[in-house]
Image (cartoon, rainbow, N blue to C red; front, side, top):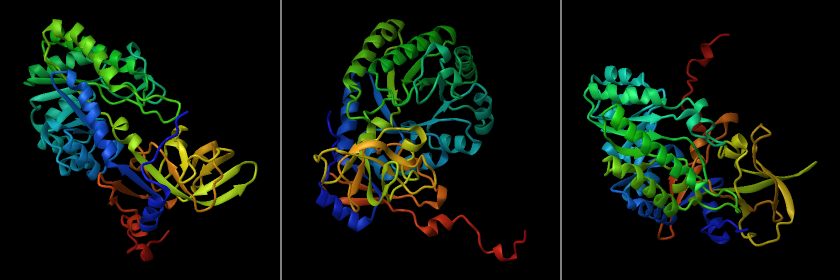
Length: 422
């Protein structure tokens, strides 16, 4: 079994903790850059390729600016995410706006910045046309294959998901949009999340390629790009293997040559909107052991909580835990590593074999670079931690300060409370 690694030694980490306090997230810029370059190189097999980073995974402008410099676009689903992308240098067709019960003002802003509108339902055609006055030149739709495609444990069965259009609806939707003056078309789906089986993505591409051919024959439209969504997982557990980007790209290229080339749809652009595999392995939540408890189990209490990283508590998700400076010590103690939230699910590790933990030890929670700080919340009036960036030159900069009590109270109005009667 391979132990998870961390880019800093204990002394360097202690210095950072002394300066910024714990808990905090820290991301590795060099590792993120190297990873996205490898991801992009793998899919250079296609006539054109673009990765729209899923902003929801790590919505920090410093991270987005790094990815923009590496040629990425942004996958957005809200007005603040659109603004984040715009301020990070991602505009126009480098932004995919994947709608989901979207308010009118968000469509207006997305259209104003030239983003691609990826519609989630056939009724959204009328809604968008009424909102904007006319449909944009380029439209994309999200396909839901229902029982024709198996989902996975995290995203569930496609036929039970609220997302996307059925096969019959999607044929009608493209034909309708063409009649209304739309001239350019994309096609999108996302039917899995955190999937580690590489063949799953090849099968998904084959499904979309066949649908693109059907749309050409039945709706008389030419699909110019296929967006495979996200869904590529990462090996949270030490015994899991990472998805081989090159294997996936070559497998998709094989079905591309079998389906797309003979149909006359070549060249067809391939798009992804991954978040988790881009930044997930290169971000860590660092927290300090501040309490121990000895009852029916051995507990280590830390100064982070589920409010900082909700995946273990919400999904029962596994995150590797290591102790700074004790990575190669015997893993001969069994602990629940817990936070201070008033919920029993506030646990980062359950019955986990770890080295002996002493109060004051720094605990590193791995693979927290996506859907970590982004999913934080303020239940129990907890204040969310900040974010740091380990630069390529070895320096560390703060890219989001920790929340303060003033932040928590900023949206509350106490001025009229004295005259308020109940």
